[in-house]
Amino acid sequence: MDLNRLAARIVKDSTEPETRETRDPAAVERGEKGGKARAQQMSPEQRSEAARRAARARWDSRPS
Image (cartoon, rainbow, N blue to C red; front, side):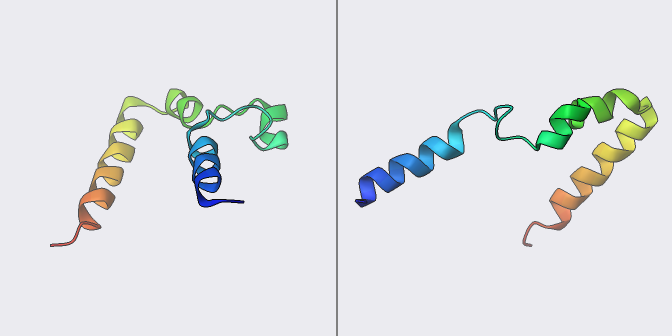
């Protein structure tokens, strides 16, 4: 395979939206929706705390 075709395949694979076929079949069967469903089950305080922890993790990992 030449490098141009390989590069095109990599870009295509990384930019295509996730389909039901690429998701975990067990998760699809259970109807899991990921982060959106998790956020709906959390209280506003819990969502705020999760966002605070995520922001802290992002800022703490940045080089000084």
